Amino acid sequence: MGLNSAVRDLHGKSLKSHKVSAFTLSERAYPPCFKTPKHSHQRPLFCFVIQGGYTETYGSRTCACEPSTLLFHAADELHSEHFHDSGGRSFIVEIEPWWLQRIHEHSVIIDSSADFNGGILPLLGMKLYREFLEMGEVSSLVIEGLMLAIIGETSRSKAPASVSRPPRWLDQAKQLLHDRFIEPLTLAEIAQEVGVHPVHLAQVFHKYYHCTVGEYVRQLRIDLACKQLASSNIPLCQIALTLGFADQSHFTRIFKRYMGVTPSQYRELIAKP
Image (tube, rainbow, N blue to C red; front, side, top):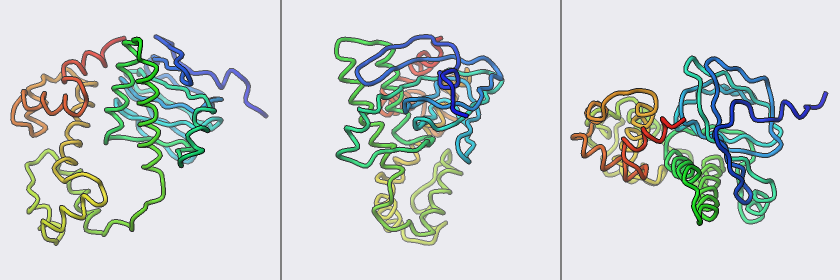
């Protein structure tokens, strides 16, 4: 039996929406413990989680979505959400198929549902959300530029690797960073743990992840800071020290460099109904 129009609609309560060129942007709120039926959308869309959290199911995958998670839903693909006790708020960008087709004529692009956490995407999502809230004379141009960047980053992450698979020891080094990124690890300590020379570690890490080990660690700290700012009232000074920053001013400086806003501005943006 075909899907009727009701199950194609966006769920939740619309707080604000704008139509800009090939994009329909909206912010939506969801009550605690809200469950959507399995549904799909006529147009592909990106969903950026602003507040709260939920469990998403699509295809054979189930994923936990929290603030800064970015999801891509392909058109007509069934999925469902189960919101947690705090409910949630999401920023959604629906895309006209002709816009994606125009890009596809020149490049490989993402074409199946996927979820993303960390890296540059939370920064791009937050910039897009800020532009949506402020909406000025050049917002159409800015929004299209940010959407091109988001399409590029998500497509690159899902494209076939252009280089060989990382060596096993590099996977071990990456896992070590994820397990202990709050600690003041040195390059020499990491290299010793995985049995390679520090210079070789630095070179191969950059080859595969396109950043230094230090930059990777800093991004992990910023990602966790975003989650804590969105889901708690922990003082900024405490977040700074817990995540290994020298002090609150150091944390603020680095956070703004990565996210484009200060931690307090980020918390204020996330808290807006």
